[in-house]
Image (cartoon, rainbow, N blue to C red; front, side, top):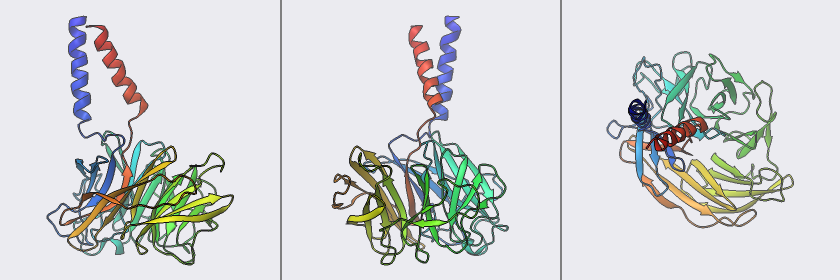
Length: 374
């Protein structure tokens, strides 16, 4: 039995580690990159990579998403649209969520963003910690217009946004989505979930910072977009990604907000006291749009990305840590970690997904079984 068991366990490890060769490392960051470094970027479509970086800026791996027309997981992007590719991580930590297109032919015959969803499906992608990609194609999402972001609690309940059609909801695998907010608010950039509440950023009308959506995590229509009292809706514009945190033990719930404003060229900090949000400083950040972060006690480490809109692309990954805590003044400067090459552009950024607990338990059990028999 022992002679059979050891080869079996060895085979298990070969298969496991082989299948996990492209696994993401928890604590690293992942960038949505458009362009292969050779073909110029264009609105007719470019390939998408998920680039994993360590927190010191070392490239760990690049995962190419399938670009071929007819592939069941095809997902490509408009190469010159800086508003696309705002990747998020599900709130349970297990999936990266992002959007794209499914054109046939590829490259497409005209700008992807102008196509109808019935002609060029918009696509939601999700990737787990082992690098397994799954996609969901929809004809009624951001049609016409740029698909921009998707978020989820667990990879199954999905909220999405784009240039048109408001915020939408679909359960994973649905053929259609539900419009949960009205068409009156367009140009939505980012959707994210914090504290079991759906939030969005937009450059539309009077809502041009970060807003909450009625119903918490709604799955039905006729929801309202609600302003966060105190944010400077009348004086700023072009909010992109954002990070929220609970830093104060005395202020219930989410109390701190960081926002990337690309036209103001800053990352801004706001803190909530009661129902009012107040401003607590900025860090210079020229045209940064992607943003994610890690909370460690009172410290928040932010990772931000920017990327070009021309055929040659460009962009940077940068970081800054705010050690001032709740209602402390945000200051300092970004540290550049990585730079996109020619004919490629960075878009959004998110923390890497973490493995399923069952996977970790299975590996641990196999290790213990092997050790006991030595």
